[in-house]
Amino acid sequence: MSYPYLKTKFKKNLDEKTIEIINSYWKIENGIFINSPTKLRNELNITQPKLNSIVKKNSETKLYIDDCIQCKKNPIIIPVTSQSNAKKEIENTLFRCGTCDNSLKYVLNEYEYSKRKSLELIYAFKCKYWTKLTEEELNVLKKIIEYDDYRLFWKDFIQKDKNYYYPIIHKLNRFSLIDVQRNPINERASTVNFLAGLKKELGIKRKNKNIHTESSLNFYLPKRAQTKNTDPNFSKRIVFDQNIVIKAGTEYICSVWYNLDGSINFKMKSMDDLMGMTDESDDFEPKLIGEFIKNIKKKMKS
Ligand SMILES: [Zn+2]
Image (cartoon, rainbow, N blue to C red; front, top):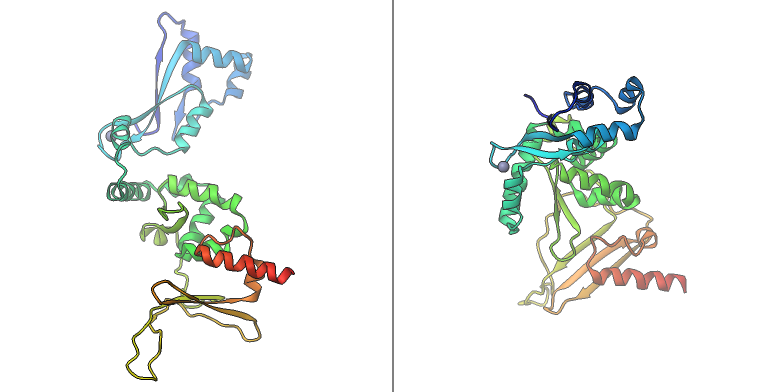
């Protein structure tokens, strides 16, 4: 039998008619229920609560979703009580059978987690889980892959409409189409990984990462011992992974911070960006800089 399928256990001594109703209620082909509750209750001329009670009182049904990706032998089984309940379970993809899932609950170290997650990514890819997404969700996935830079994606899309993007990203992660890596300290998403094959499979052309306008510039410079008067006090070699465009006629604020170890942090940001910042938009900024921006805003207002 191909997944997903259902197995129903009937109560003893049921009449044929009841069995027939329950069987037609649970009839599924290619993941789709053949007889909707509305269709059935119209045919039988009964109410929805009546139909529900016929099904629930006289039978127990289990949904078989797929083979477990961990042990590769047990099916993933979930008890279901209604079509809508079953539909949700098919949507909410599980990857493991009950036994394997329980055995994993106590394994939380990073290595085990990434091993587990990569197994899921491969499985989701193999089973083309993107076909389970709505068009909107698929578009977000495509954009994430096209950008291949979560920080930039956050800036261009997420921060403008968090309520829209966060649930979708959460779902993509749950489906293991992406792997959201979080900063262990503040739990914020820092990077998003995905299988390289997705790019080709979804027909995404690589975004040219070299043409990119960045309006802020940050770096750290360690202190150097001077042997000659002409030697710099601070220096470091820096290789940027993209062009950084500094626009003519735009006002920038350049700032330097001393660190405890004698090094400095350099930051350059356009005035427009500083003015447009909200208190929440510092997801990627160190705390000190967030404070600095607030102070600037205060000064601008007064
Ligand atoms: Zn298993």
